[in-house]
Image (cartoon, rainbow, N blue to C red; front, side, top):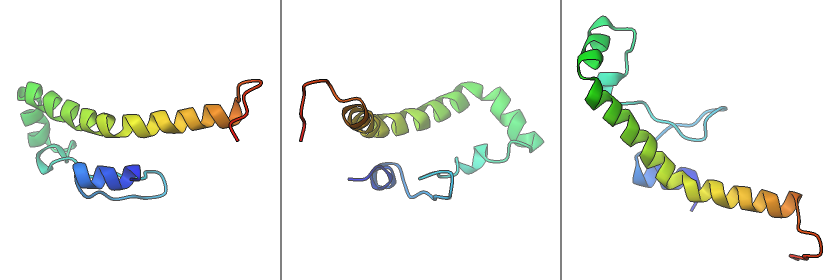
Length: 88
């Protein structure tokens, strides 16, 4: 299963653009960082804010890690083959 499909199934529907394969906005309460009230709430609830962003990042890392490992392994095998080892 492609990484984008996996992210959409496990974390939620996202969007994509020319730069990002998949992204989605953070929860509404954390979205408007230029709003004084949002910043104020985030400052006084920073433990829960850090926990929220940490959990979001770790969910993506847990899903993406195997895809990244596979891609790196493939690149190493294709672009840096072991001498005397014919993989074909």
